[in-house]
Amino acid sequence: MALLQLERISAQYPGATTPVLADISLTLGPQQLLVALGPSGSGKTSLLNLIAGFVEPSAGRITLDGVPVKGPSAERGVVFQDDALLPWQDVLANVGFGLELAGVPKAQRQVRAHEMLALADLAGFDSRRIWQLSGGQKQRVGLARALAADPRVLLMDEPFGALDAFTREQMQELLLQVWRRTAKPVFLITHDIEEAVFLATDLILLAPNPGQIVERLSLDFGQRYAAGESARAIKSDPRFIETREHVLGKVFSQRQVYA
Amino acid sequence: MSSYEIPATAVSQASPPLRRTLSTRWISVLTLVALLALWWAVTASGLIEPLFLPPPAAVLQKGWLLATSGYMDSTLWQHLGASLGRIGLGLGFAVLTAVPVGIAIGANRIARGILDPLIEFYRPIPPLAYLPLIVIWCGIGELSKVLLIYLAIFAPIAIATATGVRTVDPAKLRAAQSLGATRAQLIRHVILPSALPDILTGVRIGLGVGWSTLVAAELIAATSGLGFMVQSAAQFLVTDVVVLGILVIALIAFAMEMGLRALQRKLVPWHGQAH
Image (cartoon, rainbow over the protein chains, first blue to last red):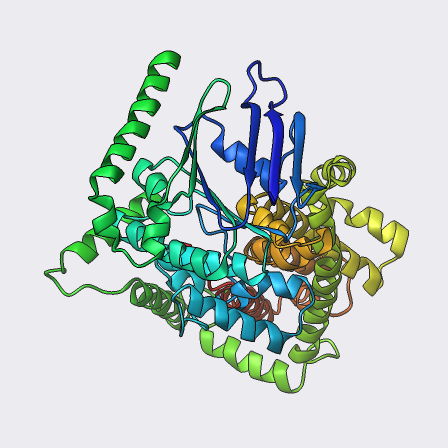
């Protein structure tokens, strides 16, 4: 059964002539890692903002477990591109922030926060201050914070876009491990083609003016990594390269149409 | 100014200085010492009469006398206490009211529409210009002085708070919302701590304005306080008390500024850090 469902979603900013998104339909179910790939202006951030409830669609319906989505809520956890952590709290308090908002007693939320930090490979960082962390560590805290609130789905807004190439690869691998262990459905947006092909169980390619889905692929590279294969072996697999080039070609053909 | 300072530090960090250089702090200390020496020299040599400028030793001696036996029925401590009590009360009430008002202005369109023009209207008026009106309404008692300080401190804190609220990182707000924060929780957990550096800056500015307003008000209508002490001493040409009073007023202002900077470092250590 589909968990998250988007039915014929359109979005338009007030005063704009062309919609940002037109007629988007998609579903996100258990065990899925859905990646929306697209160049800037293709509306992928708008798509995430709609699902998160930060903005409302101008047409169409978004439901989670059959219930219409209305405004932001703790059942749709978000990891942001620029961490959005609270610098006046330490790492542990940041991770437990969602539980604090929900009124969970301190001892209990610290236990949970410790678990999530261990999951994000940040054990021992409890009392660090946010400004003492590197970019990759901040994203791990952001991931642990979103997971600590035990959301139904995890939304990720270009989470590794601001990281250097090495850290980005590590974070992609970490995400796949976390995804496998928590079994949370993930919706991730990115403009990095290799990242998209590596992570996605389901890939949608967005094209701009107006934002629309021009390609849907089912992939298994992420699952192969989760099953124990090495990331380098997967990324140098001819089938991986072929898929990457196919998607790249699609992106460029779309570019020419709208250039 | 700052555009001059930045390359200077950058250069001194990049290449170690060849000559032994004085730190900025020592230059400041030396300047003060030089001024004191000049003061001593012109008074000791009889170049300036004690009526116009008493020697440092006389001022110091008078200070001891004031602290122990007093001037105009009150000791220096009582005058100081009167002034500090007034500014403390004014500041307390100002923080309690200006922070909520600032949050309302920053976070709510209707509150901004109502309050913003009111504050912007009275803020540029020098407090001493409306002191006579306050005296007509509230008399010359403590109330009018505290009210004057309150009004002088209120505007900078409210405006700084509103600025802080308006510049809260929208990503932090969205993050809190997606973790289930209610509107009240957003204010308590995200908006207020985000705006704290601005609020403290507002308090610093407010205290500066408040202190000068208070002393000026005491010059005009008071029977105690540092301003009153200086004013009444001037009427009898007791110049050493006048000089001493001015020095104490300056010292208090300096101490408040330093105290608030220390508070700012302690309360908002993340401010100015890359995060």
